[in-house]
Length: 79
Image: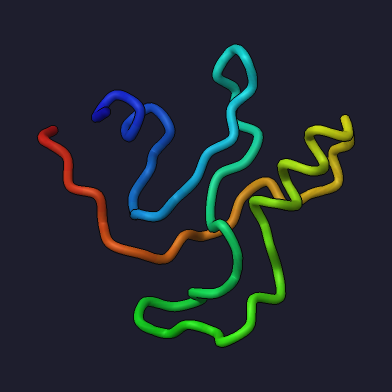
């Protein structure tokens, strides 16, 4: 667990990754834009970052946001 956290510089929960078959990072960040600041959430999601990335990758296209800044609780590691 700590190896993955440090290898991909994960810092908060929830933070998602999409990796290719050899471990290259294709997407890192938020699921959507519901939480745009700690403690502040939108009532309506208007951007689905993860869903869009999955769709674009599945279609073989590269037209998606590769990184978003995740909002959540800090990940504590033993290192």
